[in-house]
Length: 207
Image (cartoon, rainbow, N blue to C red; front, side, top):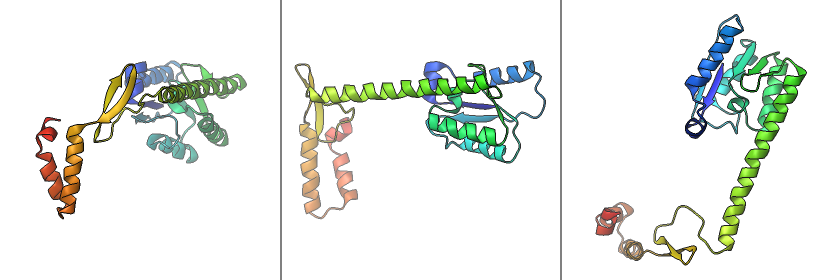
């Protein structure tokens, strides 16, 4: 039984580990599946890559001949990209392992199940790529209109608005501190000494 959640998905989708485990064990009991059940719990990691600690452990157990069936709550708990799907399907086929996804009712022992699995992952990958493209297009268009699009601002600058445009301007206090740091360097102060002096500045204390 393989379960996975990331903190973002836990908050947004409710795919928490406890719910996935509950559904998995209920299925095992309902189907009266025999044999030992091993639980692989993955927390705080993305399914964009198959290089995950517990997934690697699962793959090694498959290669060691310890696994007959892999049960997941939903296909995107296991993989989100076609490349990752191909890798896992090849592994399952090589070692005659059955994959069961509860939400999509996928069973890879059937041709229909294998086809459905490919279609679901293709749609998920398309949706993910489309969202990424829209985000990039939005950033590019915002920059083209003269807006400062990054969320973080380098020391010495601050955000400001001129009309409806988000721009940068000098932060006078930080610029003053930058000049002070340059002055101290020229006077052969080391970095540690400079940091102590700068951190005692009233502006830094109030930030």
